[in-house]
Length: 391
Image 1 (tube, one colour):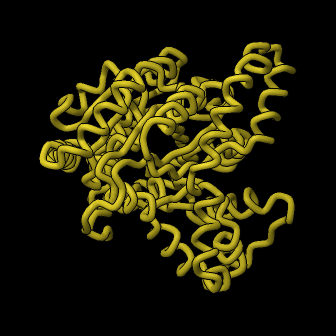
Image 2 (cartoon, rainbow, N blue to C red):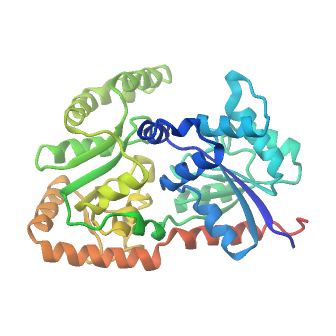
Image 3 (tube, rainbow, N blue to C red):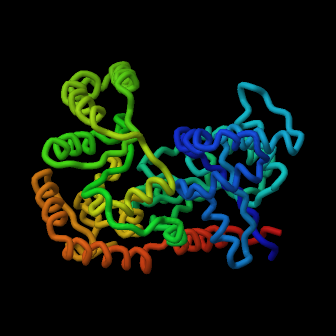
């Protein structure tokens, strides 16, 4: 059997892309290859790690596209003489890349932002193609993922949902890309406690995170780097809830959310991404983690493994399945209340030997048991199981 050709269409946060081009104003004028190397080298999200790991044993050939990286994608179009319309350049260039690569597998990572109609368009042009989807925030939506044959999720509850809905679904355990660590600077911690993440205040978003961080910020110093919903965007989201008839979300929650959001926006630093974010974790004695509301009772986000993988001491919200990943209070520290979180953080900050012991144990666990490479290779095996008959 020849190598299976997998096309992964991903997107980066616009601010993560923008920060790279702001730091190097000449980057946008360079060729596609130079921009691609720089973008993937930032180690944002999964970067090109699917390509790196799936191609390592010779059974896959992978194309990684960042379809919303405007300067890079348009550089590709120019070099390949591909025409596109101003209003639809993203999909025009992406479909041209798919046509050139002629994949057996199409994987639109982040299908919530890339329309399901685009996947249907890919299937129309390649009738035998297998289409994969990924749901990492419990969308549990068969409309968004209607064109998919295979579904992956880091939430076992979502895997169950998609299987019961007729999909071939598989659990994708999140993990850390250990090859990143050689790019991080080893130095004494610069911050006692940090939090890095987003504040999306839509349905099943970060309401609990906002409530929690606002309370913690009043009781201890935390270095916050947050990609936050603007207040105007928040009000628009509440207006949509009102139109949908959700009176609690539209009229009650803002009375509590607005002052909390105001408190945090006065002290937070801008969002940081990729290597810059991982370096901050590495520079922090302790790192806070609070899951998105959609995670429910499941521990399942990247920060669990990014914080421990870089060597910070992770202090995270308790979930019943957290024990499946780490030993509590030996490899990570967990909490159920604000009081418990603040108490444990202050204890760790004042007891360096104990903190270092937990941080080292957590890092060892992640670098041996929670490697992104293993998760990607397992996903590859699952995909190969559905590729019999491909030429």
